[in-house]
Image (tube, rainbow, N blue to C red):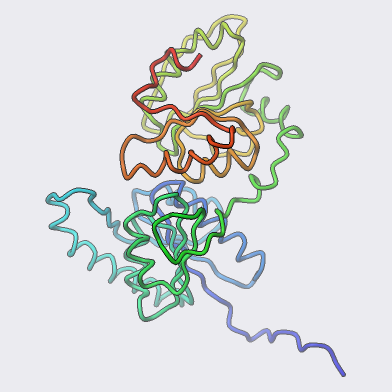
Length: 329
């Protein structure tokens, strides 16, 4: 009796299309899934959908994946003129997306929410299997619609509002999931030009930055310096902050964006920032205490994201309106 027959080299190589553009919160889990797919099936092709204005235009090619651009479909949260224009925008985006799916030979569409997810779901409906993943504690509009036509719906946490969702957590990139902060600490401090020994606060407001956090923390630079605390502050590509150096104090390092988040986490002793689902998952995974400041807009999902960690004693939640400079010291 012989062993199992090895797979034929002529077997179809699967093509997985991931849709999660706009912000890092949608892109990173999509890319983490892409990495996992390619590890399990080295012959697989992964194609990411994105838009001209999304962060995916930079992140996806840097990670080595094919990016196909489609028209964005922002979903208005309130009745306005954009809502009246929505059907035409959706129709155009679905047509463009369907053409991409046909051209790349897609076998399945996996959506993570955001501007590109809705046209991806509608373009694949009745043609391809659809998988929906919800990272946030409260699902967004695109995934609520997508869940109704999906073959499988998964969520990071219970109670996301998708009903039938299977709870599987959030896919994280290997550099974060397997991060040894202690082993990388010295290298990370050198990489960012931080004091090798001072307690260090990592500050960021999501991939685009957060003005209220930028203002509060930069205004507290003198107090932080006097307390011997170093700061690594990602203020967002479209924002600027001015901080005067204090002689003899640990460095306050301000950067527009942090690409090496593994090193940022390794350099830090605590985090202050927004609490998107990916941020909460990564900060929790690497074991850093945090002060989370939920985005004061949207459907309130950021506060829900942070609540379990705060309830477990791993974080403190501070409302955005209660973040004057004095609270940072």
